[in-house]
Amino acid sequence: MYEIIFYLIGIAIIFCLIRMIKGPTIPDRVIAGDTISSLAIVIIILFAIKYNNMMFIDIAIVISILSFISTIIISKYLLGKEIGEE
Amino acid sequence: MFEFIGYVIIFIGSLIAIIGSFGLLRFPDVYTRSHAQTVTIVGGVCLILIGILTSQPISQTTIKIIFLIIFIFLTSPTATHAITKAAYRSGIKPKVKKDELASSGN
Image 1: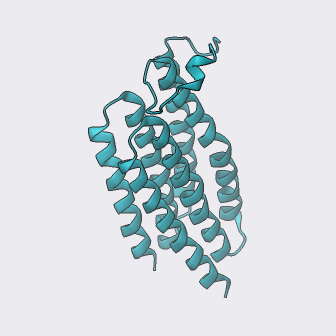
Image 2: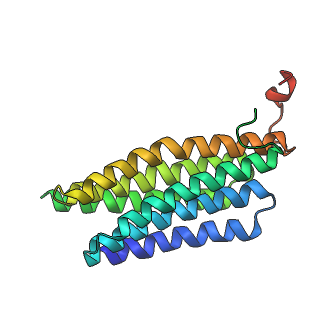
């Protein structure tokens, strides 16, 4: 059952990867990368459930935190401000 | 029984994820692409995680997945708002007939 879900999410990641390669501006690439990291969280959790190894769920939590922080930092970089400055 | 319902929910969520990422490929603009990204994350990823919760018995793992769903619901719209605001302020024009945010003097 889970193999079909792996293939479907793989197709979704390929769509995001095409947009990340040919996206004309920087925010396009950042949005595509954020989507890829969220889909990778799903693949890691399905892998943990399928092979009954629950260590991978902590890795998924860390990846979600890192993708949020990197998106916020790149948006602050595009605005040309420091973190915490309005 | 609950296992079968969980599998159905996981399958629907993966179909929504494919539809959202296809919209990310086909939409013409940064702002409409951010809409497609929200469909992928909130509609696809969170639905797949809810399906996993339905098909598994309650343990330490499901508690962690519940916290992960709450975290994704909180942080994904925040990150999308920040990056679209940065895109507008850095000079990318939306493809609309009349830009009401620019005419409001903001």
